[in-house]
Length: 622
Image (cartoon, rainbow, N blue to C red; front, side, top):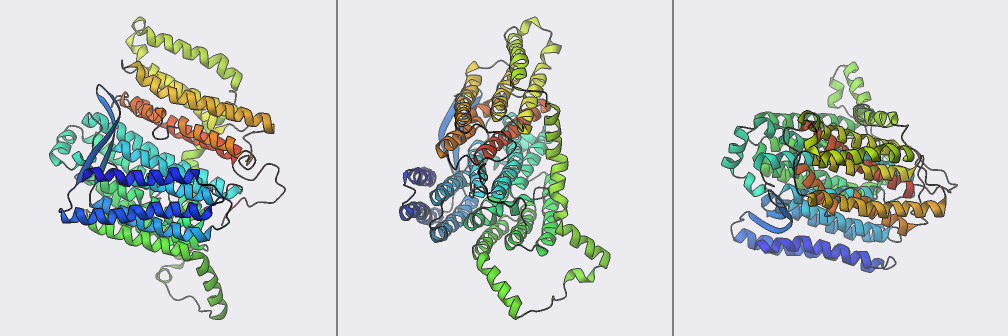
């Protein structure tokens, strides 16, 4: 029975691969591949669910594939099936099937028709991997697929400024959630001494035994999971990304940000509930976060002039209530609430273009004055203050910029003196000196040796910060990203003696994909002359093949599943000790800014309005 679980990953994977080879002009065949794939999964699940219920709905776990194994470390793909998975699969399959059928007609003769269905199937594969995940590694694979497919669908209209700009903004919030997962994986590996399976988290005695002597470690892991869930589900202070994601086509807004992707944070909390169930402080924090988000998002939704934005904030408010239900331990209510919210928001977004027309006509012919509301009972000063704050979305965007992105940009600008020549002349000899220290560690005092990992990590962070804020040279920005990975590898190698194959596996992916990406940029520079980072160039319009090659290189360098870089990053984190919070933070910061710098290069060079366009464009959205 457990072997059948693999089919729910293989069917979407096969459908996605087939969709890649379907000619772009064959719209009918492309759409049939899409909803045929999702329909087959839905029908297969219904048969499987019937048999599963007859058997008494047992919890299933399948250790499917060991990707990499050494002494003390095992990277494995693990699948898990229970009532939470069954609910998410039923809702996800039904809604994806309906949206693919709807999109067949909605996007007829659209230039990116094939690209849209490719990305939808890619998203569906990632969604299934997340909900069937049996450990953090498998979940993170699907989590990353959801992130990149979100970016591609928001930037679907890639010849426009706003969709590309908002896609980068949403991806930047997703990277914050990624670091929460990474740090939770890192600390849980040290807490349990293994890549813990979710099945084992249901063992109260096992979890209690490990947390009894490491209560603060448990709090740290739970908080990292909460950050990841809040970022993915648009809870405070990350709420403003959801309406910005509506720049994509209406069907993708419905399936992604109204129903499925936005509920992944809810899934993460449901799946890890047995771990933090007895941590009362964490349950209180989750409940308060959900309550505060519901109140703020409700107020913002009531003053929105855009239908999509109103639906987005309404969904955020409902997810806040689901957070409260999970914190209270009401799992069945949370699952029912998830299904109801997902179906409602999908319907609302799909009919939103028609609703706008109906409402305009109704107001024109049948105007009705505004009725008395709850806010009218408040003191006028308070009512007006809440109204203005809600109009400004409680300045959440400004908060994120002021306390998160502006400090990062400020640090990067302080490194403005760096250029390619200085990097090569000064930093490469320093790296060679670091290798000498590593090989001849016995020649140096222990007090010096133990500070070197942090020093080298700081140098790596400096490079990636400079790459993130680079405004001129795209190729130099790319080189700095590659060198950052080498500094991270060197820093972690000072921690403990481990097989050199771990480092080679990590750097092999970075080096190979980095070289391909550099050659793609060099070729584009030769053809176009200018690929400066001070504007969007939109070169994917004239050079789609180079754009595709560079995108694949970006995925390989940033650690996309399951590249050597992805496995290597997990290996690297396993060698950071649990008391080395500073090193773990710097390494995580490197990976976050690294991904942002890479996607920024891709967006600036290949997306947006073409550099030679003479047409006006919008630079602000409603």
